Length: 254
Image 1: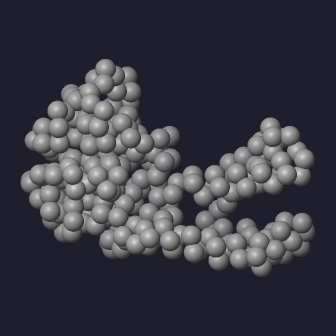
Image 2 (image 1 turned 60 degrees about the horizontal axis):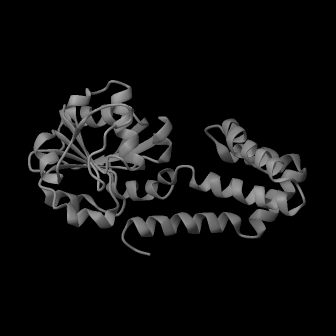
Image 3 (image 1 turned 90 degrees about the vertical axis):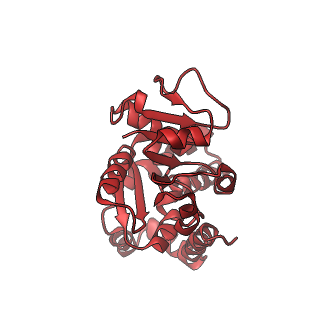
């Protein structure tokens, strides 16, 4: 399997390239990489092929991974006829990607791909065959957990949720840190406390998160008071509205 990555030094493309090589899923001689800056002297400690341009990469590869900003897609002019194309782009649907002539898979890793813990849902068009699906699973397993979907529209919804990766927890941590500093705590103490809530507290959340919330509410202590006030102030509504805005952006709105 010869793999080409367009956008190979970006956040997701770089995570995939590094994982494939570091985990020895493919040999460096079977990886073709391309970015806007041109060839580098080193690629995460490896020496893959640096493609001259999109056409050069497409010709050499069996699988083409497109990991660029959605607005950069039209300028690629990708001719992928006879190839498997895996897109990491939001807001570029399969019918548009299919104009490249390839067999199309849309996947949405998140930033946790950098540490091998991404949840990556993906959707494949009808012409993606059984061998293609094996390749997709192999490549995306390198980034963490992968899961095929049967409805493309569901990928848009997941893009606004799991695709956000650490963004929502980071916003929560930043808000808590600022709150503590505002009450006179030293920055270091505020930072350690906020990060503990997000990083360590998150490990206690099981398959039924609402059940844990209900336990705190039933205890009727200080946390319950905070949760009730947040709900009264529209925090839950705001979170849902935010995710809906993300879905709309993924579908070309906003």
